[in-house]
Length: 275
Image (tube, rainbow, N blue to C red; front, side, top):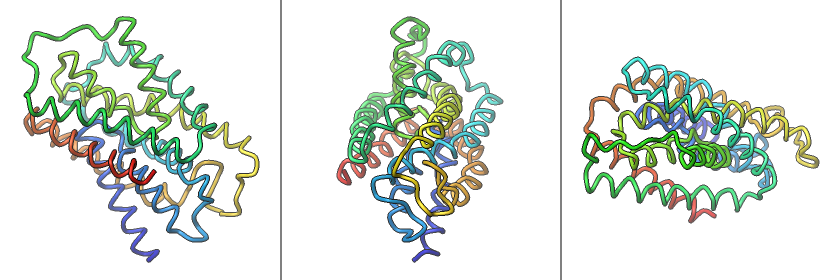
């Protein structure tokens, strides 16, 4: 059983990396549910049930750091990153990610899982409608540097940090709503993964120092982070990200929206039923 579990984690890492490149998601949509399940199936190498979701989120964010760097670089080389938007949103996303880590420390497992599922479900509906209706026509791009868009960037940082994801689940639907082609929305969102994951990981590391009563004897568990999960998930996640980027720039925008929407819908329903 344990050998099969490790194989599943390795496969999850490969899928997370590929989807990080394909959809700019950072990989947390795959890795958080898989890590959450794995921690409950690892016996003595797992963690207390009350700590499972926090560990899955924090460790997923740690994996996202190198994965998002690889993914964003590949998108940038293909001209898929909207640099002005990335620069304008950067500070707000970073602040939001730190706030999200602080909030996550005070939420229980069920609250985190429910929040994860509901928000993904709403984003999935938006992208499926986009795929059904087709992409917006060129020439209708609207500004994403105003006060409301900066608030959206702040929200993306908070929500993504809470959920252990890279931010594309929220950024891509919003950017497409504002008229951006989905390939450019995905490429820009891939950069946000690093902006979210790095401060969120710092926040979780700081908070884990004060998590009284949660220290475990598990040698792989350091605060809210699980080294065994990272070891099995991260390598192929990093390796497979550029292959997802290549696919994102080959398939049609409508198909990419549909793939993104279906995946979010399945993930959200699974998380909500689990909660």
